[in-house]
Each structure stands twice: as structure tokens, then as C-alpha cells.
Image 1 (cartoon, rainbow, N blue to C red):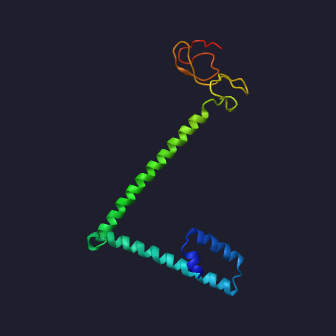
Image 2: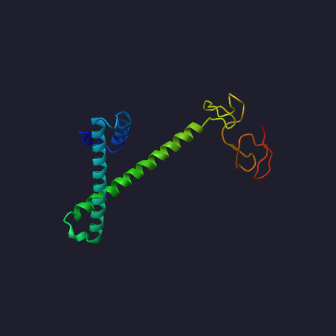
Image 3: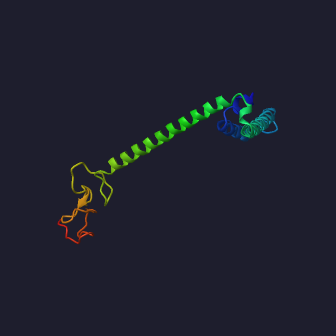
Length: 158
């Protein structure tokens, strides 16, 4: 019974089983049942892993000998397709996260980090210049508060 309850749940079963082992006295009938069920589940898991390894080795040695080879190819194609979808979704999530970060950075003061309303040129918290500044002479991008352009040396007004 404990094997049915915890054995099929993987990591959750291991966690619950570990908690149960620490709560249930080991010398009680319930503790012995839990220990026996846990040991049996561990052995069955080892058996399954070993059989899978044996099956992979045998299949790789002679793939044409198995009638399930076509079904396996189809499953592998489906896995590749699902992996591509997952990769695409992860990339889209990363792009959305980057876009959100860029949006959050708009109006954020480089000096104190405060968020300022759109259209404000100076931070309402500390007075630092906001936004991208370009050189009056050559147009290169400058950090807010730059007094002289690093590209052409031109003085920058207020």
C-alpha cells in the first residue's frame, strides 16, 4: 500500500517517505512496513533503470530487429519537435523579459534608481539628468552628466 501511494510519485514520494521515516518509529509495525515498502520501491526503480539501459544497448546494436523501431523513430521525432517548441518558448520568454526590463529602465534615474514619469528630464528624487544624451557637436551617445564628449572633446552645455 505504501509502495502504491509513494512509489509512483517519484521525488514527492521520496520526500514524503523521508518525512514518514523520521516520524514513524522504525521498530513499530508501521515503521517496518514503511521500510520494507521503501526498500522494495528502490529495488524496482533500480531494476527498471537497468532494464532500460539493457534495452538501449540491445536496440543500438541491432535496431532493425525490433518491430517497435518505427514507433520509436516517431516518438523521437515528436521529442525533437517538442524540444524545438520548448526552445522557442524559452527564447520568447527571455525576449519578453528583456523587453520588460528595458521598459522598466525608461525613466529610471541612473543616479538613485528612482522611477520618474515619462517626459521628465531630471530625476524628481535627486535631480540627476535622465535619458540618453548625445554630443552637441558629433552626436555620439553620452552618459547623463557628461561635461565633455569623449569622442570629440566638445563641451556639453547644462
